Length: 104
Length: 216
Picture 1: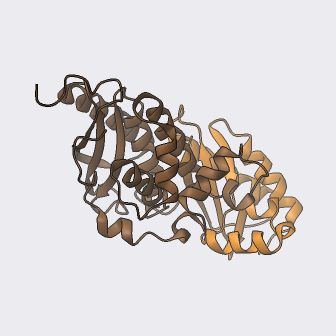
Picture 2: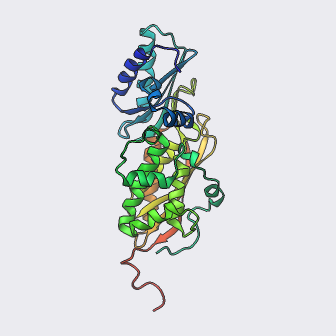
Picture 3: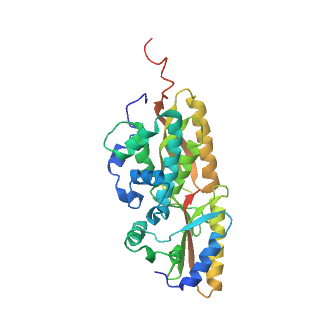
């Protein structure tokens, strides 16, 4: 569960998805099998909010990137946008972690 | 018809240790079935799993290779009967599972903040597999990254095991594979790659290529 309001994170998630080179966002949880179990038990419990996780000032996002663009460049753009967007929304984050989980 | 009876990559211990949770709760044959069903009805536990998505992409490429080399049914049989032990197709399908697992986080950002930007080892292995599979006449069986990839600047070696089709020059094909992998790693990672080792573990002869092979 995130510390932030769902609507704010959904807007930021949409902005991240629109960055050139980003193919899609994956659920940000670091333990996928936990999410899988949740999805199997209660599919409605899994929604857009899970795409960005913010805990104790650390924001985390997992993305798939386009193979045509260098992954580090895309990750950097995502990092900078997330930092700016969350800060602008009034949510101070001390760290942003971008995890590329697929190059598609 | 495979020319060599040995498993492609000598990773028997790893294959035997494979568990369904390695693919976020799914087995490789479940993914093959999902693909056969047109990925319908949608299963979020597969659609939202990067490991499953990487594995599905690899299965599609194996099947494409199979169109050139073997009957597609053999692939499905191998996936459904993992204990049958009948060679390279089974091993490749199982290796897809192993390679798709997320694994270690590889830094791709600034050395001062190595945790900020990372790419998963599983996605890099999938990248390597795809680059190799794109070269005509070869199919990647297994790949691994040797070295501490979690440390920026650490030297690593890439090891790839592969099956080659009869009629292709091994030196020429492996050089193209090496170049393709190197290009992708330079583009998408910050890894210091000391070398790319390619082992041709299997030579595959297509059904229409067997004439003339063997004693006269």
